[in-house]
Image: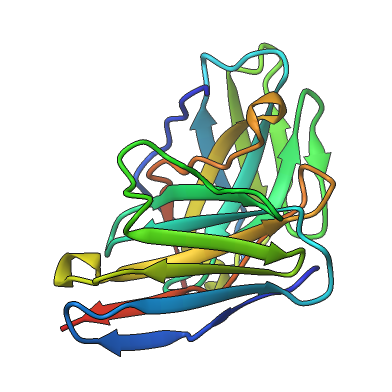
Amino acid sequence: DAKTTQPPSMDCAEGRAANLPCNHSTISGNEYVYWYRQIHSQGPQYIIHGLKNNETNEMASLIITEDRKSSTLILPHATLRDTAVYYCIVLTYNQGGKLIFGQGTELSVKP
Amino acid sequence: GAVVSQHPSRVICKSGTSVKIECRSLDFQATTMFWYRQFPKKSLMLMATSNEGSKATYEQGVEKDKFLINHASLTLSTLTVTSAHPEDSSFYICSARTGMLYEQYFGPGTRLTVT
């Protein structure tokens, strides 16, 4: 599975956009980029996923570079409840679709 | 979204005893369930993958005789920590996947403390 690299921590002001980067330079053509987040002492929550194109849903937007070696998760208007650890995961369906978590980015949204 | 529950949410047991943790998919049938453990300030570590009606597949380094996994139905998987020791104290999280590969939902976790 391709490895991902994320900054260990980031701060964001409440109401501003939070841009969380992820590097996955060894990603293969059939591997998807998934984002999950984990609020303290809870199970992870699915946010969004994509293959090549940018994706948007009610929670966030996912921007994937053209060479697919990196991506950015955008929370357009961060709130205090978005404080969590955000995990970027590269997933290969033909290996059973196991989600292997890296260290993630601890996002702190501050008032 | 779909709901996955875990029971109990917290459990304290004495060293040497066994503890069973249940994972249920409440409103969908889960063809595959996964078990993770998480130590404080650390990321989730995948322990095993279980498919309904077949033996679980354990990740390297995970003792299959210590962590017994049963996936008897499409809505229930259990993890039994046998002969628990203090080092088994951890946060155990399950996830369940539907037939659609990208739909994987996580339970709220079970905090196990072995005294």
